[in-house]
Length: 349
Image 1 (cartoon, helix red, strand yellow):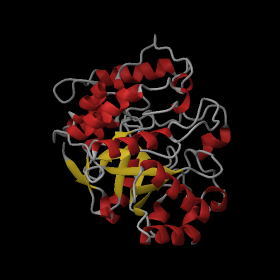
Image 2 (cartoon, rainbow, N blue to C red; image 1 turned 135 degrees about the vertical axis):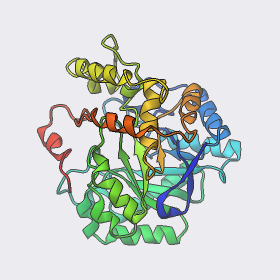
Image 3 (cartoon, rainbow, N blue to C red; image 1 turned 135 degrees about the horizontal axis):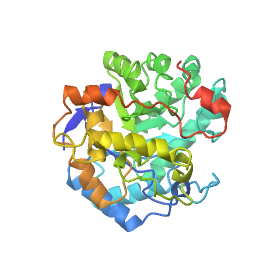
């Protein structure tokens, strides 16, 4: 496993991290995972040199209707793993504070008091610390954001307080879907050290503003959804059927033909540089030096091994990177019928 700098945090993180939203519980309508397999996947990831686990307070907590059920299962399983394995000092954990109003994304114009009031931030940090069985969280991220929050001082005072108390070592933001510039003013406060954002072969917009800004200001970059919710694994075809999980909307029958057409075109590029579409997708992201780590969602040992194998130092050629620019496909499959969300999803702050 190769390691990269996580911006100005001073941390060295595995360039292939482990996303854990599907690790435990019943995440967003998916079938409940085999948590014994999930635990084995955590062990295997660390055996292969992995040291960066990305989780969130809500992971595994919501059913398909969005109602809160049970505990925050991903954090719980990770806490059990860290205690059982004795890897607390070897593994860095990044978690996230959910918006108090439970709205994803944070809508334009909303007040931060409705999303991240001061006492709520403290309560969520304390709750995650308890569940993870940790004394200090390596990286705590806000799970939604609007850049106008930069004008508010209360959250700044709160995170400085929690840092001084030793409860959180570093702070970041997991920015709204497909809004890669909706954080630049906030980065100028100097209080946020990392940005987590959607980045993949289809969604290349972060290269326009976010990556240059991050490079100039030494911001750690965590790339999420690298496989486009499984679409860039190469396994989805016109015969693919989804029942209760979110992919039944994401890859609905209206979208599927265009999606399959585009992934079939990408498969024509496979060869010496990448033998599978998933490998191509991960190598694309890691070919950007400024990316600190990519966090494909993982819950199986075989997937951990395949993802880790990409961390071998090989980057895609300039010719391949130029070709992949032609495959940009900007769209938002997370919103379906709400025109307001569709509009907001492309607002560049």
